[in-house]
Image (cartoon, rainbow, N blue to C red; front, side, top):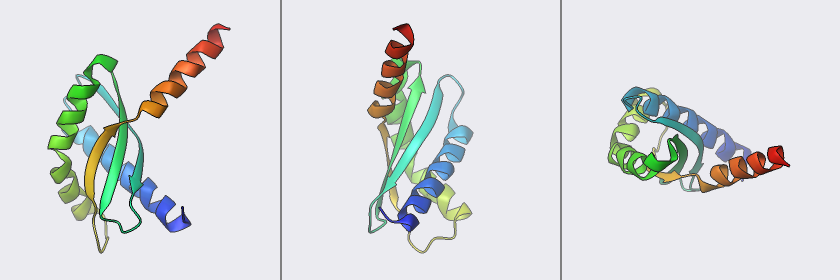
Length: 107
């Protein structure tokens, strides 16, 4: 991955986190963990975790319903020639990392 794409990923992650903070109703804690933009900048997968864990599927459908609004939010705040279409996905890697950390603490 190039340095430019890394900076773009971080910028889009911060924008998605800011947007998510404005639309949630604080019934579940949603954390944006990372964003992966395609090389042609047409698609961006935004990964997240949520607490309680039982609400993850509901949070994913909620966020994906608001993905078009995120595009408008990013357009108003970022000076980009081309904006990607956003898709939210649960970050299972982060959950696995947290579980491994918990096991290592118990040992």
